[in-house]
Length: 108
Image (cartoon, rainbow, N blue to C red; front, side):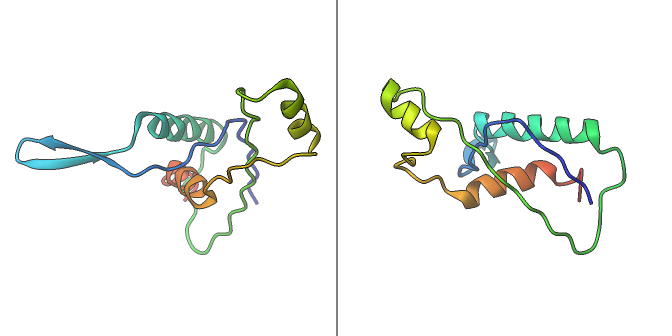
């Protein structure tokens, strides 16, 4: 069993961007997503120095998001205390996708 805690704010996987490259089209990740994936991969490589795992795997992910800075002091404290929940729910699938993509080739 491998347990690793990443102390990073999660970043959602966004749609790939496209650019013309000669007569073809090149797809790439937006800058924030690319930086997040690189940071996760680098941190994972520092702690896991074995061959990638193969076969059936189970992955458990828990995400914690920071409280927005644009809230009033009262609302911010209510959210920190757990009395108010965020109004906009994040897209959990996209958090999972960006994280699993970053770990591909390292853990599996």
